[in-house]
Figure 1 (cartoon, chains in turn blue, purple):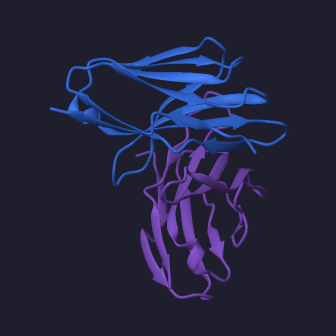
Figure 2 (cartoon, chains in turn green, orange):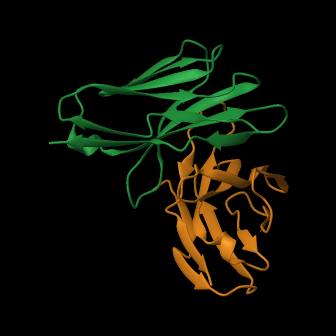
Figure 3 (cartoon, each protein chain N blue to C red):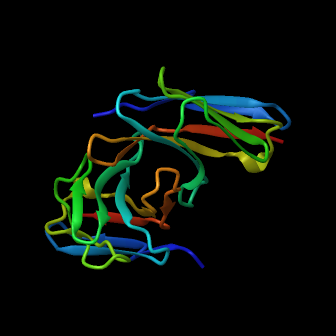
Length: 113
Length: 113
């Protein structure tokens, strides 16, 4: 079974601060790395799907990088806003004939106005 | 509107009383999956399906059954629910291309007394 770890577990930042989180995953049989944004009482919403080593993706103030050789991905938020407050999940998909996903436990971000 | 729907959204039942949680998607996705969310744990995959009549176990399949008779539907069946199956359940779907995002349903909160 893969083990996906996210750090930090939770984070409080001031409005306007930039921040970043880490997702670590086993690099063997790597297939894809998904990032999700999960607001309380809602369902996870896809941010990025990353597949290639060195991938960089950006959506507005949020960006992500991927290193499949060492097994980590970073998510960056530039100029955090209160509406960015959510739990950010990563999920690693590995394949050896199957397509299972293993999720991390998430980083809970609170942006203080 | 492209979406994944689940029913019911909330269910309280008793030990041993068979139940089915339905999941339907209107995006013509091949891949569908069920997850459960428990406090302190990441989303854990129960079962997934790559296409009609093709299903595979995730990491926590014990006590659950699924079927995929039609492409759009992927019901989760609990033949004899037990209190340890009290959880928040999500259904999700995606296309089979490696870069495809996974779309989540709204969740079903199940309590087994």
